[in-house]
Structures are given as structure tokens and as C-alpha cells.
Length: 142
Image (cartoon, rainbow, N blue to C red; front, side):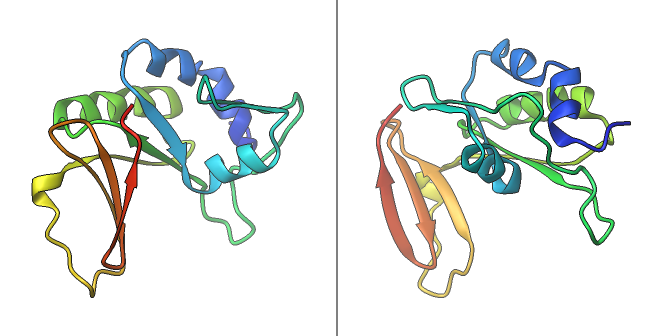
């Protein structure tokens, strides 16, 4: 078992496996941030981040906990989200903690001013919304 997160992901060809599903997904959280900050190249047009050879992010944190792999599946469909989660689980196994979540239908957006967590929503026209602490931010349609 490798202690480098990038080795774990490359070993199972995770990106290729997820691309084969045909849906959009985004790696977010600490791994996503680490990849962007240490990127060799970021292609905004292709929505890809290329990291240099030899890059390392320890799978085990200094406190002994295992790094997590947070993935946003750009769909409100539970079956699509579950399929992405299964593929990620099959590739990564128990080498990392897996968190897979999707978009919520905007009609379910009932959070108010006392909301302290973020939510990602999509309306019936495909417009994306992010809500944090009662504030709404609108994104571009894919």
C-alpha cells in the first residue's frame, strides 16, 4: 500500500474509470486544493489539472488519520452519484476515506440565514447554485 495519494489514484486509473461513466465530477477538498496549488498545468477549457511527476501527498496525515477523497458528482440523480461512488470505491478500496456527493434539486433549497454549511444545487434549467451561510451564489450552466 503506497503512502502517496497520487500513486493510489494512478494505480487504479481512476480518472479513466470515471470518464467512462460519461458524467461530470470534480475532486474537491484537500486533495483538489493540493493538486491546483502544485499544478504543472491547469486547463480551464478542459477542466483538468496536471500535476508534475514525483508529486507527493501523504496518504496518512501527521495525526495518523487517512486522507479523504472528496468528489462532487455534478448531478442530482442518486443512481449517478451511487455509480460514481462504487467506481471510486472499487479503484481506491480502503486506502483512503471516500466521500461522494452530488447536487441537490434547487426546489429543495430551504436553508436559511442560520445555515453554517454549504449546499450545491441545480435548477430545472441546469443552472448551478451554491449556498453558504444563507448566501446564494450563482454559477454558469455547464
